[in-house]
Length: 218
Image (cartoon, rainbow, N blue to C red; front, side):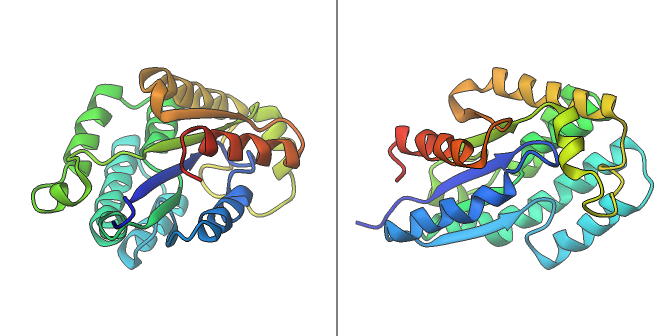
């Protein structure tokens, strides 16, 4: 019997360390005999990567930003994520829709209900795609939220690279982003695993493994 596709997203503000744990989890799934697709948002397809460049570097208002994020996501879903799930792969995605609610909804203060409408428009599949993954509104099976105080994240990122439009925002912006993540986690608690990212790397890795193992994924 073919393995069921599995979709995991990694969320958190820049500096939380989520990206450094994706490859290790990918290796664990590969060791278990699973096919793994590593991807990211915004991005993951040629079109979505172009949108990523615009979103990170060009000035725009919050609605334009949100529309671009969901446009990139729709292409990413139809071209990469859904086909991978349909063939039984494990998809590990560096950020997904929760980031839009956190950054555009929390950080930018864009209307939450409007984001919910855009989410349903962009992430609802029609048959036969929906039949292949047994659900029409595509969401991760598990979201690993790397929660870190923005002050600690800022210390980690200091001097690391030239900041983009988001990384250059003030501390209050990232406090609002963190609150946005918390709101999403509260609204869909079974999907979320909060990872305390303000601890040594080995402890974070152990927490990630435990969250995945508890659900019987590896």
